[in-house]
Length: 305
Length: 322
Image (cartoon, rainbow over all chains, first blue to last red; front, side):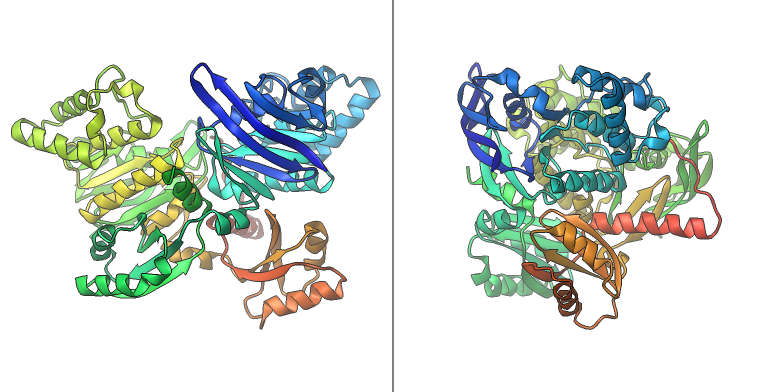
């Protein structure tokens, strides 16, 4: 069962193609990541999925609703947390929840009960009467998530939810997402953090409106990396770096006392590279093939286009 | 003798402790990364090191100069790139560089050579007439760096230089820093991105105004005690419930399509032992692999562990609101 089915979706603004013929599916109960730099088309895609922006062409079905034809039918079934979420700073935690609950049509005892449930879920009961402005950054994020959950949405759409959140709160936030996914809620989350994208069940890499890859993080690393990444450990990296830069490699990057190189057929060039480094007096300690990072894949995919 | 040295550096803003006693020893030519979440105190620390903010207490020496007493004397030694580096939006790339050359008294033939060199270095030669306001985020950062380098500083302080920059420009920026490192410039760079720490020779983890630990990137993984196993399975919730009763279990958490399980270091063949345990619980899984903890996991462990210690010692953590 798919929560989201997107086929050949395109959005132009004048001559600018913000989203260019993208297709993907998101299964129910899955945490699906949308990874790309600022301006790559992530938010435009979200706006189309929420029925807020008509696509130029293509199809999108969200929770079995054709959002191109019936955009009005989707809003109440989706929980949406935008980059700049609009919590009222001068309302208390509880008042913010009540306000958003009412906008979703919750009333009376049902609203009070649901409010208690989401407060318990995110662990904010003790702070329910605090002013929202007085909450620490990580808690504001969780409160914004809570407001998006009030109407029990089947799909949660989160646009860069953890930007500027410290690692501990980020982990807490993800623990909540895993819990929700475990209960069958589908989570569609955008991020520009490579390490955060690794935490998704599946993800799509997007760049300049084009999908570069779709799949589980580990699978993408195996299938979408042309060539290998090799870690070079030398006694004198300052000597090694210019030698490697002259060796016709796709990537040469200094990582502290190590150097990462990338390129096609690297596993067959290890002896040659070792010989070059030794001849220059770099003092080679080790050359070993390492798994690529998502960033390696991203760079390799964008530089071949 | 360190090129950049500070002892017991402190700064409050009202009741908020931004920097709560920091010591640093950064050697000549070293690339040092200061990582930490927003509000950890990185920017305040950098502003004090650059001599633009007076500390409440502590000493700073940069290439032998007492920065607290004689901040004007480090200007010629230091390139400082704050988060909001002031570029002139209506001036072109070249004009911005000329302006900064004038400020730092770089004149004549030297000025011409230096600017050409920096334009090439920052890969901005083809954009010399474009107004700075019309550059992409990554190009703005590179121009700001070029301006900060106009007077050939020996020490470079960079405050989150890659924030909001796309991955490709980010990598290019780090390649430029590698060039500076090869030239022997001493670099202190702050970042909220854990993965960037690996680009530095040494890393300090900053949290609530203190540097919790500093080490080489290759030593980072030893910050988490025990070994980490990655369990790949369909029903991670059931696996998570079962690993808690595994002898030698220290901690666990979900990480994408797998569960990261931290176990005691003295177990022999922990993969097999955990596999056995899970099977005995009637659970199936795809595989169990030994893996290296992510830096973020080391960071979280350090912070959590430190809080445990404080609680045990009956001490209270300083309340830091930023």
